[in-house]
Image 1 (tube, one colour):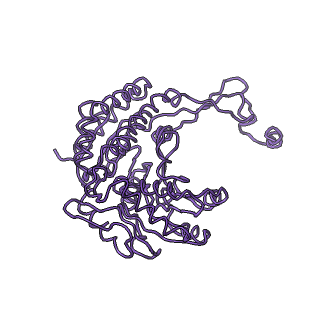
Image 2 (cartoon, rainbow, N blue to C red; image 1 turned 60 degrees about the horizontal axis):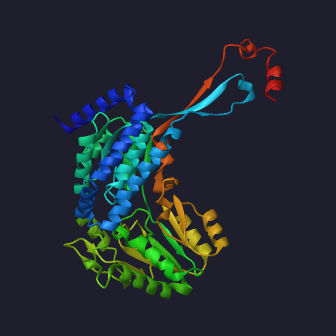
Length: 458
């Protein structure tokens, strides 16, 4: 049986199962979320091991960003789902009386989730939580570039959920292409902008709505009115976490020229505190995912290298690296870096920096370090990005109460918490009217009725 026939067969079974209405029952959804939580908890050590095998992900990073984040998201959904699924009454205009109106969330149907390799567990499971909570059947396609985690996800899902409800398809880009030939009711993709365009084009053939969680070059503005030691520590942590393979990592630093030298020194001190004299030997420092990504990133290391710059192709190792005196035209400033390489551009006039940012595609994240409230307000008002974090990095996606998503080239739609439920739901408007007071003014013939209607609506 060809993989295309298998995919079509699974989708047919999922549509049949969805039509039974089983997944719409809120108690069913709660049970499935509880089951998913138990599966994740029971497989904690296996999850950590798979992430270690794929990315050499440190235990602490694997636990915080991949394991506990999924548990927290499930717990948040379980706590709030009964409120989310309730029909909400809404006001109606006087002209519609007598009547009542409500808005009912209903599942979209069959969802496709295509996950990335940089956080290969959480970025597959987090949207799945939303799809389950909203009452959908789901197909999940993990990234083949994180094979150990992909295999683990496929095993734990297949053992605990019937394929007519949730099915994981492993494989390379050909499997993704075959999936995209099918009709889904929603496609959720996390990855690069170029692939996002392919996903959107394929979805358009079926008029399928999409959520695209992409990326881009997230700027980090560092004003001189800061606690420099704290700022350097937070930026170094966010940039070199997971070896820089984070879509919301500070991609480059825009530093006020008065503190640049001191800032570089502080970053160097932080790297040594985090990873020791040789980060290559640190148990707390990850690796680049594969040879292709290693070669791409290593080729970006050129120019005024102030910190690091060491590479090891056999281990896909790139040391924490800082490059000074970078220009906007340099190669490293053309695309998202997605590696532990931090370019620095100095500035004196914040207006020039804001103009430069606004001339580029809208980033997934924007960071500002400053105690100046007026500057904070100015940057917030005069720039556009998926999210903003002031005086820290990455924290804007740490909780389930804030929607996470991009804008423009950095993405379409959002998720996390209630936003995930909304993403995988259709909000259906319902109006109910009684049979009495049937105003004949609305019906033809209309002659002589318009003036009265205007008075009633006025």
